[in-house]
Length: 424
Image 1 (tube, rainbow, N blue to C red):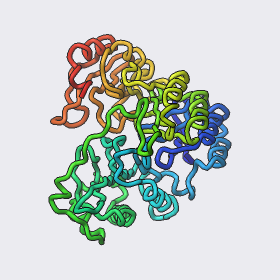
Image 2 (tube, rainbow, N blue to C red):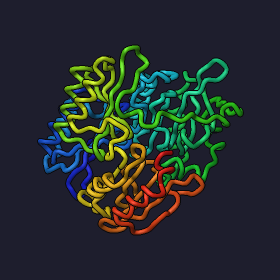
Image 3 (cartoon, one colour):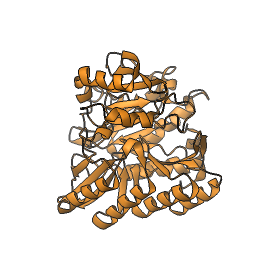
Image 4 (cartoon, helix red, strand yellow):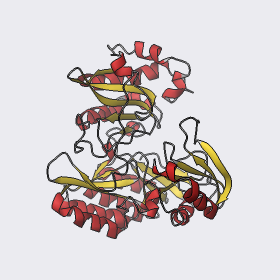
């Protein structure tokens, strides 16, 4: 938040949210700041944060406004390293094995206030998974932890440079040692990494996982019950519409921001619904959507109607919910196409597909999605894309199916031959 970077369309301010949560009052502040200091454009990121685009010359005024609302770090030097992902429904999900929020609070405090940890890269990321049904498990993290019941006790299985969806753990510790484990991993990384090794995957190219773990100074459980365990799949498109909570009689209600963007009026409207029918809080999700928790079941339909009226996508069959797009050439100098505008055209051309199943990327950086989508369209020039289908047997984006397609050609090809990948 304190390090505003320049883009083609002006400055960008990333607001990192603890567990994706913000109050309705804070949401109002973000909306007002986007109008006063920027072009009125707010984005939900693929890590459940917010960013304001198109910031003008008064960057100090914007930052002061956000800090006054409690949206900054405890220590300015710790702003960049607040990369800790939880389930958007941490504490509310009916399948959670433990509430990850207290552990997350301790970890965030350490990240923000420990000077040595400020040496970590701004992209170094940690995930704490409590076993929730609603969890993003495909994003790669430098360190991930997942709840694992073993022998009548709850452990935290953990992995390095990967994600729970595809990778097995390298070890586990009792839940009570979770904070100690994370801090040991972070300090071990800083002990071993060269200046060029900013991410865990780079470090592991030189040091084996065994060598890394043996230097943690902790008793790590690494028997077959741990290293052969795999995290079960999650709830798919459960972040849209109603999601029943652990608390009887309460639900969370969610809607996707069209192509990841929220107008100030839309964010204000969602905040008002949270005040009126929920607990006055919102949760941003890594699917570029938002959730309003603690809605009484009898008010769920009212809230869904309200979010839909504001312009959020609350149903899995919404055409625009199927596509994800980066900023594109209107705001990014690296993009080869107007991906936002092209995504709207493509959404009208495809007749099936799960939410967020088609990813339009303006360049090879794939900023809009941290994992590989079932379908990726990589821009080659304005209005023309190479089409890839995800294939677990192939690295990167998967199988290259066609080159230099127009949007009409891409839509036709997806409808004719890609029903199975889209619906996986």
